[in-house]
Length: 76
Image (cartoon, rainbow, N blue to C red; front, side, top):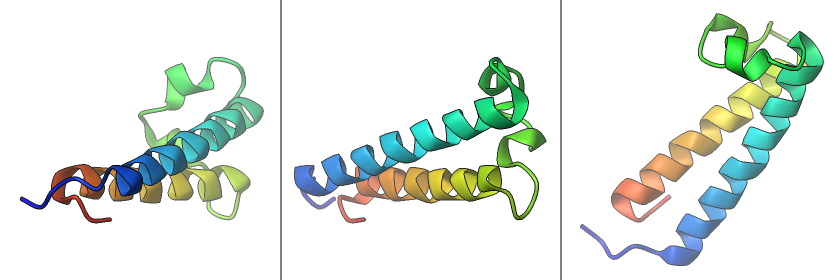
C-alpha cells in the first residue's frame, strides 16, 4: 500500500466538508429543519432531477468517493 499523502487527504476532506455543508443547507431549504435526520438516508436525499438539491447531492457523492479512494489507496 502506498504511503498516505497527507496533503491530498486533507484536500479531499476539505472538499467533503464543504460539499456536505452545502448539501445539508439545501436539504434544510428544500424540506425543512429536520430534513437531514428525516430524509438524509432515503430517496429524498438526492432531490428531484434538475434541482440545486440534486446538484449538491451529486457533488457530495463525488467528494465522498474521492475521500474514500484517498484513504484507501493514498491517491485520489
